[in-house]
Length: 125
Image (cartoon, one colour):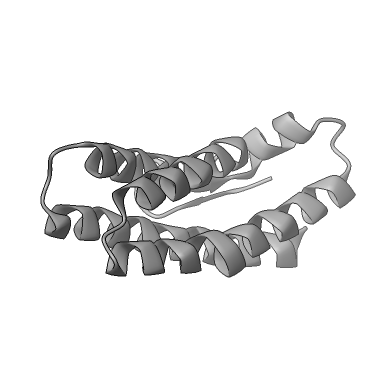
């Protein structure tokens, strides 16, 4: 089980947390979960996030950030949790559309890093 840090700050992906969540140490559920996690983020939530940020849809941004935060928390993707929280706050706060766009862009960037870490973990799993 590895940790793929972006910096000394929160983890991009902490497989120890995910393994504890899944239990029993069997690699098959870990591999299956990582694959589903990756597809859900890359193929569903992030593309919807991009559209919602381009149209400045605060309620949709909040919903998508909340979904991403929950998925990230189970996977030990601490940077994605923090970026999701920031977007939730921006979507619910009285901030400019530009501030919401910046928070959505940051979450998209962190999600891409997380997807890359998942790809790396899938090769090793």
